[in-house]
Every structure is written in C-alpha cells, then in structure tokens.
Image 1 (cartoon, rainbow, N blue to C red):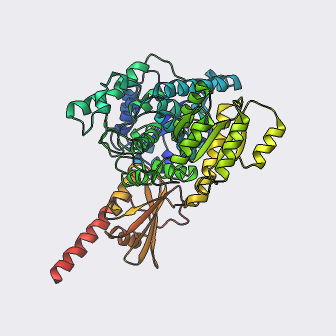
Image 2 (image 1 turned 30 degrees about the vertical axis):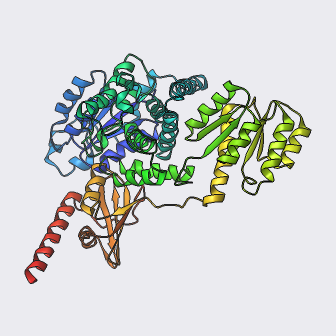
Image 3 (image 1 turned 180 degrees about the vertical axis):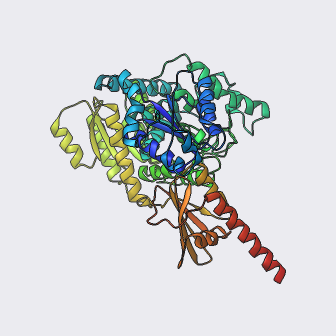
Length: 566
C-alpha cells in the first residue's frame, strides 16, 4: 500500500528538498506551507506520516503535532530543523549536546524505515489481483449504465481519461489505480437521488441542487466499510471541490484538495459537458476543452487542465466537431452484439446494430456509419456480396468494413483482404484486442478526413479573462513550477515560477524586477502557461507576493499620473 507523507515547511526550498527525496523513494507526498494549511490537509486527506520543519509562521511545531495527532492518532510525526533556517537565527542557541544534524540523504532513510520494515514487497500476484478488481468494477458499472439514456458509457470513458491524465502527470502506479477506482465509483451515491433530477428539463431547483450535492457524501457512506488498498474515499469525497475554495463539501482549495480529486474533477466536468442532458445538447470536445481552460485556476488545477489537454490531443478526441464516431454491428448473435456495443459505448462511440447483412446495407445506404463490423459466419457469400456492393458505390466505396469470423479458413481470409475489407478478425479474440483494432481504423479515418490534431502549447487565454495578478496568485497558491509567456500590444514578456515563487522575468532587453513589474502591468493581450518548464537564470530574489503588490502599486501610480495629465 502506498504511504502518504505530509511535508510542512514555510520555506519552499525546504519543502521541495524533503518532498523530492520521498517521491524518489516511491512515496506519495502532500505539501503545506504553514500549520493551518497542514491541519486542513490532515483532516481531509489520509496521511501516514508528517514531517514538520520547526519554524512555522503561524504556530509552533509542537502545537501542530498535537493537532495532527488529534485527527490522525496513528500518524507518525517528526519535527526537523533546516540548518538554513537557524544558521543566522537566535533559535540556534537552544540547541545543545543532545541535538544532532543530519543531511537529507541520511534523514530520509530514517523517516521511511518504519514503513519499509512493516511492509512486504508487492508481488506480481497482488498486482494482478488489483488490476482484476479494477476490471471487474469497470464491467459491473458499465453493465449498469449500458441502457441508460444519458449516462451510458460515461463511467468507463471517465476512467480511461483519468488514468491517462494521472500517467501524464507522472503519478506512481498506486496513485493511478487510486484515481481509476475513485473515478468508477465517484457517483455511486446517485442511487439515492430521485430519477426526476436527471430527466426533468430545465435548471434544477435549490432543493434538487442540494440533493445532487449530497450524492458525494452518500457515495462515501456506501463505501466507508471497505478497506481499500488505496486512498479512494478522499478522492471521491473531494472531486467536487474547486481550486479557489468555493466547491463542496468542505471548501478545500489548491493543494488541500487531493491530487486524485483534482484529476477526477477535470475529467468529470469534461465527460458531463460532452454528454447529452435533458436541458442541453452535448458540446463537442473542443468547446468543452475551452470551458475547462477558461476555468483553470478557479474551478480546476491549471496543471491538471494542461495535462488533460495533452491527453485529449494525443487521443484525437477532437476529430469531428459535429458528431461522435458511429459504428454499425451486423451479427446474428444478440449477446455478442450487446457485448461489443457496451465496450464501444464505453469508448464514446455511437453504436447501431442489426442482425444480418441485408439490414446492415439498408442502414449504410440511409446513414453511412464511420465503420461497419460484419459477422460472416452465418452466410459468407452474403457478406462478400454486401462488400462488393459497397465497393461499387461512389458514396460508400471508402467506408471501412471489418469482417468477423470464427473460421480459420485462410483462403477465405485472403479473399476478404483482396476484395477490400479493412480488417479480418477472429470473434474468439480478446474483446479488448478487438476494440483496439476498431479504434485504430477510426483514428486512421479521422486523420484522413480531418487531418492530424494540432499541437498546442500549455494553457492559453486572454488577459481580459484571467489577469496577470490572478495568474501569479494561482501559481503561488498551488506551488507550481511553470513558464508564463505574455504578448501585449506587440511586446512580449516571460515570467518563470519554481514551486510557486517567481524566480526569473524577461521582457525585451529588461530582466528581473523591472521586467516583472512591466509584465504584471499589462491588462490586455494573450498568455500561455506551460507547467514544468524550468528557468535558465534567477533574477528575482524577493517574495513573490511583495513583488506582485509592488507591481500593482506602480501600475496604479502610472494610471493616476495619466489621468492627472489628461
């Protein structure tokens, strides 16, 4: 089981030094900048150990230790002192012969040793068991949804996206599995919500909104008796929190929200926006993505939104701005059709079905699908005749067709390929393999028709919608490392952040504070935020919030001066 450490230190470099060592050792790490923030994290996120740097701005380390122990009695707590913090401070006078200094390389093994001593290595059998559990939950949830008009396939689709986003953020295996299971089970509490809430057109009443919000706690109550091998419940509980603190149920903000919950929040919103509802039609993927980007830093973690954008571009979700891809299944076996239908719907694909080639041809002539999957075991000649008619039709000649069969007849396979089927698959093949092959054909067709997805840089937007001061505060609040590029009135400027602190700024020939003040003063233009980009220089040494306030003061003075002249 993955252990979670909480690192508490006022100094950003001290926090990162401790956190990076723990992450490198394979542990999950949550960081806090002061005692109050650490206490809120301990209340909302399951932590196994807390490391407190002794000099906090709002309370003593001893006081924080007692508060943590009250909410997490079994949690291990260690207080450490950074030499950087005490070397020029009167606090060093309290240290004597019974106190010792350890460097980080010596300290971290001591901190993690109690956990490593009590845990046996995860073997391949346990890993397969975990994967099997996730697979079973996925199938069961999908079966419950398959005939639902509005929610069919949404849980699986959200789960796939959440897994990819967590991997894009370089999450460890345990965290990825935690996110996957939480995504599948996040809305299980909706069983207690009246069906009319989902099906009645128009906006919800206040009572209906309250009922909807209560489904989060209902989900946790249904699952709280289960001893999950991952920290699933905090992710479920907090996936409707907002990055600015205005969400529910606990009003957590920024890093107080578990990383998994921040991932699920973005994925959940995207899947909802791109699904039909009684009061609105589904948005296309591009429009939904733009809504996520527009709410980055307010509702969503901007770093998660950027990772999600990369995932969407890689998956070519934006391949047709008007409709979902459509697949036609022609098979005499109803059970097999239903199985394929369920898995294709889970991938966000619309499915039409019929029992024979005659019915398939009628559907294709009326409304051509993006792919036809045809069983040829019932009557191979009928399947070949249908294929010949399609290939002779000017409109349908390029429609992708897949033949399915349980036959091992190589002559028949060779004939089918020569006459133009796009793939020839075995019905006894693994279902996931079949779905992957179908998706490959749809992707190739999408690229042929629409062209490859464009590559984007970071999160982009207009300063009129998200100002530079808001961007600076958002990155500082989330302790993000990022590069912010700005274009305004023909001028360009860039500010680099490391762990939430502005460390470098350039604009034209200017660098450092003057460049920072100049950029912060721009109120019109465009910006791009790219997370994880490191600065090649360090020209800013002051506190970021002080620099921001000074920049805003200079901007106010300039505005006042211009008004006086006019």
